[in-house]
Image (cartoon, rainbow, N blue to C red; front, side):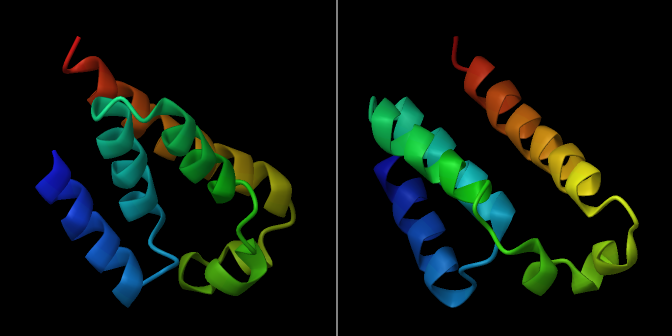
Amino acid sequence: MTTALQYVDESLETNATNNKARVFKAICLRRLGRKEEAVAVLAELLKIDYFATSLPNLLVFDEHLDEAKRARMKVLLSIAQGADNLNK
């Protein structure tokens, strides 16, 4: 799991706005028993400037940007939770 975390960190160095990589980082940290760090990584997802990062998804033009942001976050958190449950 430590190697996976290193790969995720390298990925985030290349693309710091890769939300899926952040979720995978949280999963790695959780599996390594570093729960507080995992929670902090996921909390950072809520602080992302979606105006700057949403253009490829055309969320900028969505009337309900906050709702779209919450929906996307639910998907990412579901991915993290599902992956975490695989080891239980």
